[in-house]
Image (cartoon, rainbow, N blue to C red; front, side, top):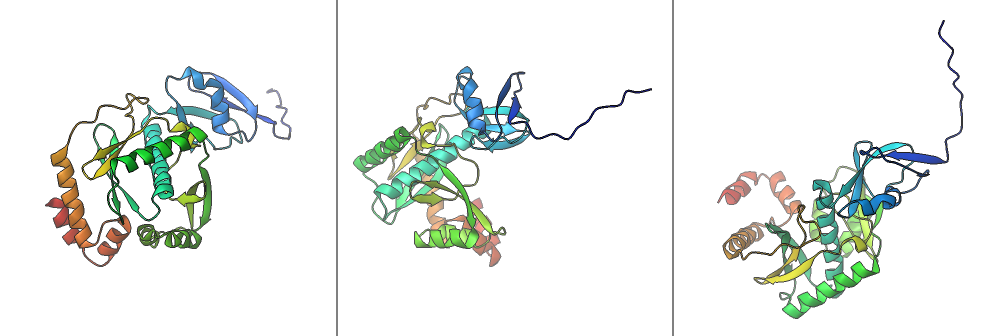
Length: 280
């Protein structure tokens, strides 16, 4: 005859356990952020931790752990970690640019093979080398101050009104096609923006970057996955840059220089026209 199991209804334990892939277990108060748990073992990784996979789902380091979980740390050397770092660095650049050049519009254009984004400025003359250096110094100051990226969900109409008041017509156009009635925004200081994905917890994580004047604009340099704490030498690419700029000029003339305008053009039956220009 089988022994009867003794099962009782109890209160939740005040502590939870995180089980790591290598067999290690971390224990701490329920509700503690994933990053605070992982800080205890951060020095055992060769590169910085920027996120975590909690029970199979990618999470930010600010995600609170409410129950026992299997957790896999994500570093800058991982594909997800590299994307989070680049996305956060772009946000830092946008915020710093808005601080110094509020009348200009920053366009983060195309990627560079050695690790970077080519950027242009509209609404004012191109940044001079001294202005690019000032922008870089301001970004470094924001990194040194280790300011938090605050994540918040706001009603969609409130987000649209915020971007409209800031003159971000491209974002207003894009959000007109959003189906959900809320939007996740990130705040740095008094400014907010919308990004497609997770971010690092604060500016202090973004130590590896550079700004290089490039053919009327500048390149935001970031590290690649295989050397996540180094910036690789940037090759000269005038022909590729010229092709990208020509393509960008065509899109400007077609009135589809952003995703919101692209959605509107497709809705109005201009899809074939856009495809023909892209193929050319």
